[in-house]
Length: 314
Length: 241
Image (cartoon, rainbow over all chains, first blue to last red; front, side):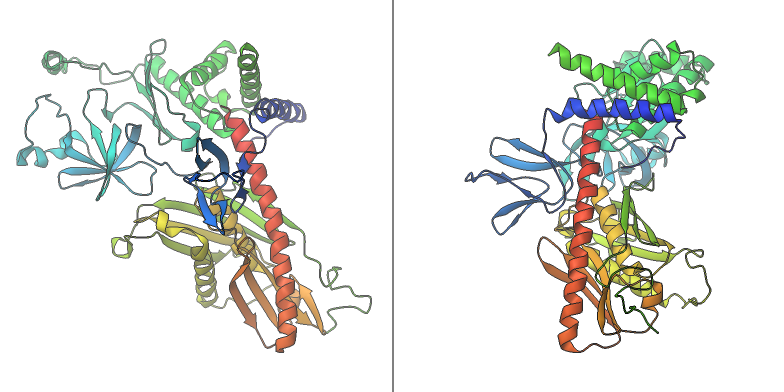
């Protein structure tokens, strides 16, 4: 198992082990032998007409796993859900990506997929908000919208013959400024209704990209209609061009919370991240102290407690 | 030189059919998509896998399958004595090629078209059987990266010294100049994907030695399977539902 690169004292080691054991016992009751490794055969109970899904192959009539993961069965479909792997896009997923190339009428984005994704100029709203045909002038001014190395939030539109297409047809998508980008393994981000969160308490935006890219930045007002745009243009001169120290501290704190959770391999949801931040605040820890081994053990214990309480409620 | 004592013990105290202790660890390189270290006795290798990712050199891009690349290197501190002369880049190039071909044969490259998989292996400690250790480490790293494979490739070497077939040669036995075979094996499919031999062997003995190496491969596969299953379970329960 990937070791935590932390110096743990003897008591901390014992406590961490205990917490992890508790987590293990909580989950093992759900599915005991669903985990498979490469080339393990999957029993299909002599059922006829089952469908082989992702991560499986046929070998002399047997279903064999091709990746390490967990066997899932949906009606007649048998597939293996891989854990650690690159991101596999699904239509409608909200992603965070980084622009690697500005090309003809399109941006190429790095999204932790086997290829770069394509964001067409025509599949995003222009900053002036007017719906119109994209002219050659727009194409020349593409760098004024996104440049190389910009961080962008977008949605998966679908796969076409030239690659994976994204779209950003709403004000909530677009360039991300004033914040931090963290990368975690994609399996830790669970698909939910909401991926873009605004934590009012701290004045920050949190975007949990389905591809494992997590954006934590200063909150930016979403301009809903075009009326607002004019006002924003006028007030641009007065707009603050710095982030308040308080907000920046919260950004770092949240980023550290994400780092710990990713190190421990825990699922990332808004509530768990918030809980971790609150735990650090209640303990009066400095931001840098959040990365200490003691806090890591505490988070693990807290998570074990949380999951067991959820279990009891059921 | 006497490689097997009259009592039937080898230079490092093993029996002829005994392997060195194997140990593996998954997740050695934090930034990589998949990584592993693999130890066979005093031989220690680290492997890191990146990908499937965008092809760097567009002219190499393949529209129906993934491009697999491999880079083998030996750390300068991996051999204590300077007896093993630096043989230029030839040896590394050859081993890179061997590992690449072996891994490519079992990766389901057709599932990841227009992408590239990079495998980097580095020998941290060399004590014979680096080729085998590299293949084993690369397999684990690929499995960790979630890359679909037909089977786990495992590798082991065997030799024939003092009229005895020996399993898993160490550096001293390897450099004795006797016959020595390295076998890459797919345990589930029961197929040999790699077979290399130095020096010559009579055909009837070759079969023995090869069977011995295959047995070694099977033992390695069992161990790897355990490690991978443990790792998968741990990832799953830590993540929670």
